[in-house]
Length: 251
Image (cartoon, rainbow, N blue to C red; front, side, top):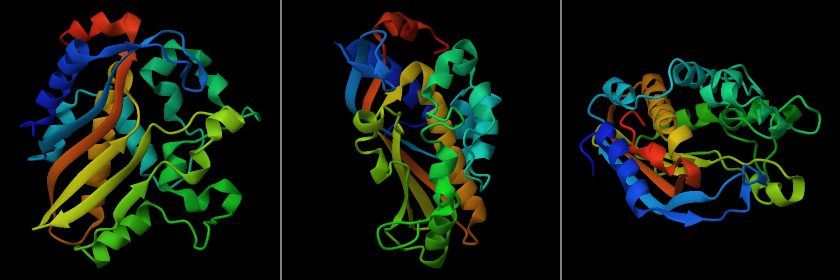
């Protein structure tokens, strides 16, 4: 376990640079990959959240975009596309991101706002296999009504994502989901992600996850403090041509 998020971020950069391997990937975000990947598999990041605001600040995320997008995610509306996608620094540099929209040219294949608030998305169908879809509020209600629960999970990867690339040629979420458990007056968070671009997303991903935790704590009536953070990354990477950028101190 790292002693704080700042040390964790810097050490993961060092690990990726020195232990990564070159891999010739066929696809990148459902399109032909423009470059080989420099990747590191099966990584776990752990650190205590002694002060959640300080931890979020230590992420050195892309501001003000990350703060604004956090508010968009927890705002209670299944926005697609929303507003902040166009303010993301890497979107500004690459307007071709619009090619990831659906055939209608109006919406993206998914947004995190839709996945946080699915019961209000999907043309109002709100259908699961047997039960109505749950959302972030239902997760909070679960933690509120039973602080001992082992069922505090917010899924981002939905069954419809399985096969979406091959069947529909669409992007699928990088995040799989978030798990929360309360023990001894502390709420611990586990963040599961299948794929993470270190240079474009890593700092923002942690910031947004911590921001989600802060939002949940603020909604609970129990005297709950932030505990520990764990992030399980199945594939941490950057483009092979960008590997040397990892040496820069501000990355």
